[in-house]
Image 1 (tube, one colour):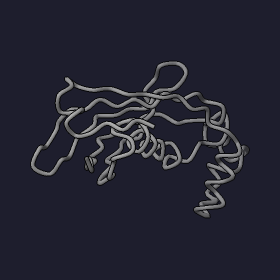
Image 2 (tube, rainbow, N blue to C red; image 1 turned 30 degrees about the vertical axis):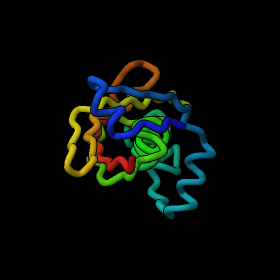
Image 3 (cartoon, rainbow, N blue to C red; image 1 turned 135 degrees about the horizontal axis):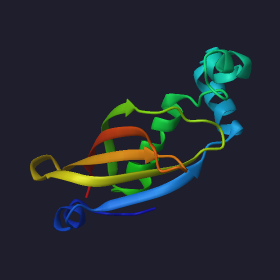
Image 4 (spheres, one colour; image 1 turned 90 degrees about the vertical axis):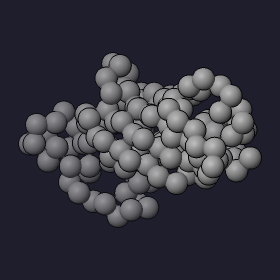
Length: 140
């Protein structure tokens, strides 16, 4: 876990961090269990195929949840107070996809010790599946 302070981030030019994760069936089951979202697009392969997809779609908010890891573990890490995530879904994600979650500090706000991160998630083919703007306070 990174421990970047506000000063670390403010003094660096456009700090960037990234990590990769493979979406698994277990993640999908856990997300269903936690949220109760039983939409057939996510749980019924036949239904997904009838609607033009090769398999069930990964929950968009499961994909988006990786921004919490980006901010809380990588940028800024330990001193993060996640305040806002504004996201746009660009392409579907499927079980087995290898996602790279990356973020770059676009702005620092000294008064509130807050950073704005421009983030995106790409799949194993390098295609952007999600974009986000993340606002995070930095405790130190």
